[in-house]
Amino acid sequence: MARLKALPWHEAASAAVASLIERGVHALLLHGQAGIGKLELALDTAEALLCEQRAAKGLACGHCAGCALVAAGTHPDLRIVRPAAMAEQEMERSVEGLAEAGGDSGSGATAPDPKARASREIRIEQVRDLSEWASLTTHRGGARVIVLEPAESMTTPAANALLKILEEPPAATVFLVVSHRVSETLPTLRSRCVLVAVPAPSAAVAVPWLQARGVAEAQSRLIEAGGAPLLALQAEREGLTAELRDRLTGLLRKGARLTPAEVVASVPREVPIAGAVALFQRWGWDFLAFKLAGVVRYHPKDVVAFRQLGTQWHAAEACEWLGELQTARAFADHPLNAKLAIEGMLLSYVRSIGTPQ
Image (cartoon, rainbow, N blue to C red; front, side):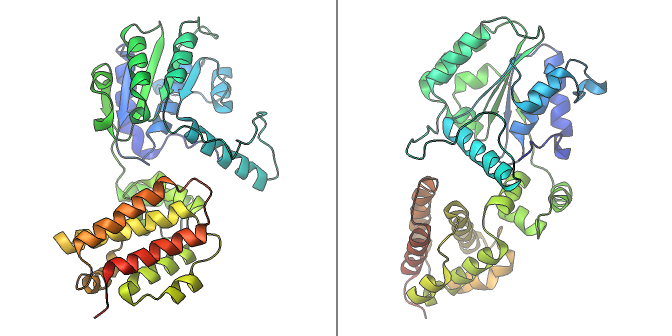
């Protein structure tokens, strides 16, 4: 999948970032909700810094050698640091997309070993490699850019090692650190960066953007994604189909009337576990929000179903079921029998509600 560039809701944040860098700030921490394109903003900034024929307003020209190297992912003065598991997932998506198009990766990359368990953390070895790389002279004689995402995934040793680089930054080097949960980043790391809040787009901006990319029912998908358009786009491309989403939601509406036979008959053999768990979680969150505050965020058309559920389902039991889903989501990327896993979650849902009235 091609990288998303110049997202329309980033105009103000992009201008703020450019202004800070122009004033000599060498470390910025871009923070905000997941799924709004903070990494894309960081990469846009990196491309502009590494452009060798920068256009008006400090934008990348898009056709010089520097821009071509960034687009190919081979610029020698750009380093992107992410957990190995995230890099693996991106590679798999790229390989799958190229396979569907009848092409090849063109990078010589091999598919990851399915038996190997990639780390979900940024480890100290990655930061040590980064430190060694940053001590060298830049290859193309211009800026050097380090993009690190997400900051909260760093181990404590890795974060401490990064602090040493930030305290004595190499010349002409800009650090663009991305965080989805800034409160979970190391306080000393936050103190050495200038924080830039990246806001989520309004629905008036995000919905047309999603519609232009072929997302059906863009308004509903955006609501389900908590207002994060990139999550909505990813869910449309890789998650549940509209038919399966409706089918699973229909099962949830039945509550305690849902029978094991209906579960077995309705859940297909192949179902994206992560997408199904996310759907179940949103249902549980909406139930609690309606029961406790009378509001519904993700399923506004199911107020009647939540009202009926509220006569049988207690908040404590709903929280227990959500806890089970959280555990299940942690293993969503591991090879499981998807049908059995989803059936188990639905049956646990029914048990948590009790006897229908």
